[in-house]
Image 1: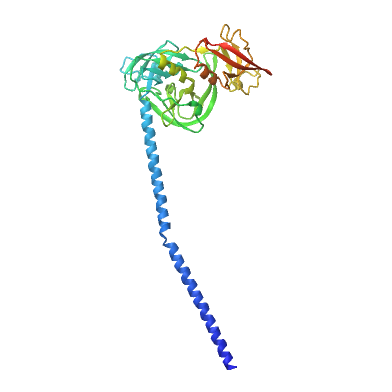
Image 2: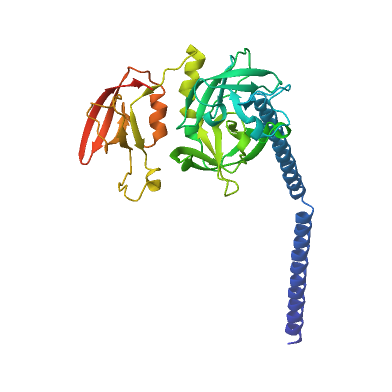
Length: 378
């Protein structure tokens, strides 16, 4: 009996000792593992890598900013001052006010002296205006082409080997993209001012009432880059320097709402002047509206236009007169090119010459027709 009690006591001691040893080993293992986690080199190195990435990002942003600044500086060299009155000083960008000299802006679009601007800045075709280059040199300019509906003009000066702007593709612009406006607001003190913003909207239509005359400007680019009166005719550019629009008007009753004319509308005309020294403008001979203008029309003008261009008037003795085209028709295509805006029609016609034939797809009620006509000279 005494022997059994002794054996049981020894077993309890061994069990207790085993438990103590197990707990000690477990504690040592956890302590060692905890220490390894705390002093891990990997954790420290990861932190350093993250810091390096941030430094590289900042450096890259600074580098991109410098590139944009360089591009803008190069572009401003291709921006000119335009005046309707000749100044007796060394430059038309004088300390006189814009009201005295009619200061506006233009851009050089060819090395042999073609200048793109607004018609309201340079005047109509064959008008005379005065151009000052970034160098300070002055030139007499003659307006070779203008369009009052588009408010665009091309002026020629007698100069060679000029630096000229790169023209972008305004059909690919997207809302939210960064843009810069360059111009000559007020006069000498603020010449070649650069403002930045974004493309706020596309295909805007605005109604303009001047001297009891009502007109519409359609398919405009809306931007919040500041546009002042003297900026008219200046470029709206991408950060890469490509011109996507020509600044034209702003809403005076609101801040941050300015408009530019898409550059694509005038590119065929510029190319014609550069290649041949002239441009013969073709016309269909109609007055028409697209769906963006309809909401601005008189309430009695009741038409639901979802696609195409509405023919409001046919010019008497014009190319469309005495053809199968009728007032009230909707033109949906020209030479198989779909049409939904007036600028799409103008852009296509600008690539054609007077005397060329075009085919129109026309919708008249539930009837679809094809109308062939010969383009006339505008």
